[in-house]
Image: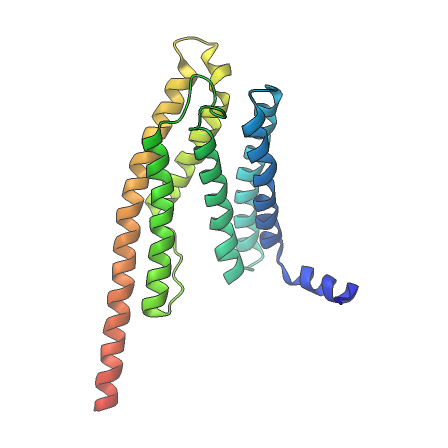
Length: 218
């Protein structure tokens, strides 16, 4: 049986950025439930938006702390994008389904395919590169970072669209549509960027392996 001291040491092993990432993962559950139920009680949508904003701010905070405290870890390199992808995938899928979408601003299926497909491609590529090279490369590209920002803004404006639409001209829906087009285009560019990075890493590993074999023969 695990003692209290062992539990304390286990918790102390986690840096503050990692703890924040775990919190972000835990907040996905209430966000998921609130979005599913927001048609039955409208304030749920605002609470879900609040949780979404909190998760976005915590993402900035854990990145800042990791740099400030110089405590970047392999666990954090996995937890941080995992929390981001879990939140985004849950949000875009729920906001595309008729029973949980925001009225008047339902995400089209092709946007969901682009965003989820991009994440699946990146994860699959990471696994393939690791299996082929044994190297842990999880460096985000500029298109990937911009895509994440566009996705976060897209979800935020979708959740706020009914209130912005009150201004007129379906302004909230139009803004949300602009961001889902941006997110979809950036998802495509991210796939191209990460594919090129993956191919370069594999090629570099093959070159190093060939040089190592050549030096051994000599």
